[in-house]
Image (cartoon, helix red, strand yellow):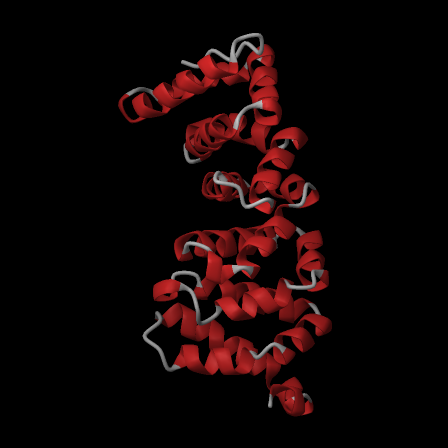
Length: 252
């Protein structure tokens, strides 16, 4: 399905990938198993590193397609554990290029497989996603929801929790997402992510309080969000209750 010889003209590869993606809904995704061959996979990596913006976007869409198929678990894991591919996707997200949406979706799809998460965290996925959601006002709300849910999954890796807490905008960005994501699509993930962080870190709790989490949770509880989200919000409020009184001057 894919002809990834690195000697080929990048323009030809770009057009081939566009055609492949258009045909993908009507063909068998199993054709992507060609990437299990070492030479083809090396070509795939090379294109991620050296390809045009259009090529990188197409490759991210292919990664997403592979990662959403349960029968492609081995290939998904192979891609997720590739340092060069992970780094390339992180770079797309960090630099907020035109391919950022495809990059976030690819990252999210790869993170569904637990075996991939440690490498994604190691290559800077959490920092990149935080950078994206910290500029929430500039971005598509649906993508912000996907980014938050991806961070939530990556928190199964212990290092990811420290990354969020230590990032200058980590906890602050999550607090802002609690009541600002369209139709509360990302609210549950934002609340659950903060619940994980706050259960694990006193510094995380302090940062959440200073950045106004109490007000955000109270607004959320008065909204039309679903029952699961409200339950998580109450759990987080209960956890923060004792520290809330100690830090009331900051909240005010």
